[in-house]
Length: 432
Image (tube, rainbow, N blue to C red; front, side, top):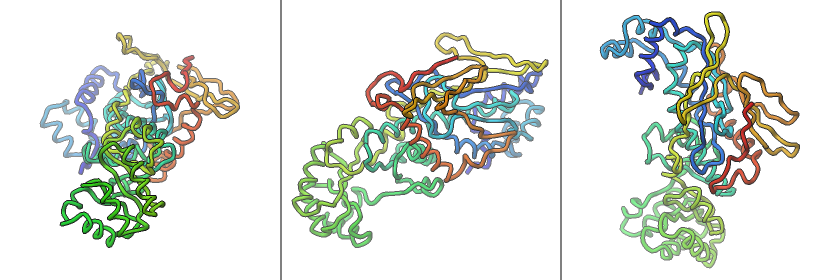
């Protein structure tokens, strides 16, 4: 377990720090922004996720004696810079879109204001969290739309590393998933956990019926039995013979739509009209949508949600947009590189809402404050002030509030903005 998060970064953050200190520019007051130049192909909106995790990790972003010793041994930076790092603690301000908020291209989802020295060190940590968590949340949100109210469980922990698995579960929960298979996510973030048995449990026993009986005797009739290890129809009959009020059966192979409808008819013919059907097996938003008319009650999603369903990163970048000169004046700055340009200056953003409560545009001002209409919703809140993290945005309750906020923000989108097929952004962005 890491005692500090300070080395969850790239070497060039520290070498830039040393060079800026040498040049006398390290203490310049700066504004950095996190944004994406474009949404992943085919996506109509993005979902902010990872804020609560970031804020907790910033508190641990310190260079302890062991870390300093390693940096010295590796000759990463000089002794003067190491002395400065030894007393590092972020003392600036961080603001941005609420966790769970909808975002679009050029949305200023996070703004960091502090000295260049303090802010540049956070770049890699911020981007690694936001790019991963937000990609998962966006994919999960589309799956929630496709499920149309049916129960969704995240079970992708085996497809990513052990720490990412917990973050994946949290991001999917914020986007509307109902449960996770990951116990650490349940403990850390208060997410409902679920899970019963795999094929190995069935294969362990001499007969399928013995496996079902053992599970039923242990967990009761409301458990879920996996019925596709051998012959599905025979398994369903055995299951209902043992447990007429069985909670659910799970299908993990074959043509899920065809099998689910056939199993539903079989269950009903056996009098098990209340026994539910859950399906797994490499689901994504498109296969979930394709099962909309099938006899499916719930879904378990693994690989696709854990890897962003084809978009493993949200495409966020962390760019300097303004700095304060020695005379106290602020200067907007921006890259002009081909296909990598950005808009300089501190941003201010609102969601334009019509009288019916539907979002019609995102309005972003650079170095100007957007004039709000009566129904407009401000998008930026304060997360850190003078180095102090706002406790309202960390922990289990904050994660639940992020989930509720996502419901609100998503409900504002016009219906066409929720379509799964490729198309324009859910609402236009107006830059002023």
